[in-house]
Amino acid sequence: MKSEEFAAAIIIIFLAVLAIAAVVYWYRHQRLLRERAEIMRDAIRHRDFSFRLPTRGLFFGEKALQEVLNDMGQEIQKLVAHSEVESWQKLTRVLTHEIMNATTPIQSISQAYLKCPEIQGSPLEEGIRAISDTSAGLATFVESYRKLTQLQEPVIADVNMLAFCKQIATLYPQLQWNIDIPADFVLQADENLLRQVFINLTKNAIEAEAKKIGLTPTLSKREGTIHPSMGGTGAGFFFSNDGHVIPLDVAQEIFIPFFTTKQTGTGIGLSLSRQILMKQGMTISLAENPLRGYNVTFVIEKS
Image 1 (cartoon, rainbow, N blue to C red):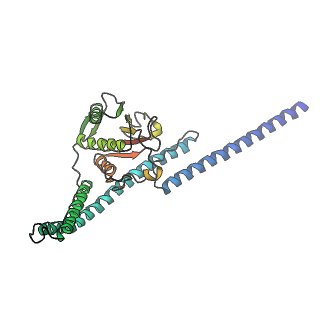
Image 2 (tube, rainbow, N blue to C red; image 1 turned 30 degrees about the horizontal axis):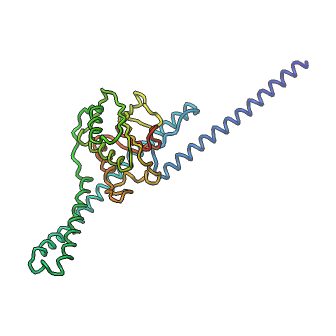
């Protein structure tokens, strides 16, 4: 009888321990889910829709939900980017039109006065010339921003990216180029427009005192992503450099037209690149975690 009581006691103790372990596991799992929800909420508050939380340790239903949320975040980011581009295009179009309407008569009138013999050599000539030069400079400044609203339509064709990237590299021999691209890797794009994007990114890297640039392809989900931690979802590229790290507060603004941290910068390079890529069904974003060996990584991929 004692042996039966002992066995029963062992079973009760085992069940109690099992119940306590289940409660502890349940509590920790729920806390994990709450932390995930807070991370995604904070990301949305800060308009950062590029979050991709891991699915390891989740049940199959939770895993499926997290994958949907990860994909949804990227889709929202793309929609927001498209909306911002359209808004900035409309604003830029209006501003350039109004500024040109104001500066054109000032420039023409001041030029006419400078040709007048009564003005030449008089105390008024210097002031009028300053007005003329200022209005001409403003007109040139505004004209440069017309690029944001007058992009040519892309002509899509197969581009061999290894040959393409080697051509870009020859333009900047002072940099160390690490091109890790298969010889048969082909991307459908407008080669001329894509070249402008790569040149813009390279110039930005040089201005950030970069010494090396890395080009690595991404693969689609169907093929398996080369660098899963980067969150690549379409065939494209990682464009990395070892220049200055981009601070978090600056990273949120770099694709906004006219935004620049450089004294002589125009602030249209990255925004123009984003618009060029969008016209070709692609996106560009700044990776939260750069590839190993670099300080900055841009992700260029199919939408």
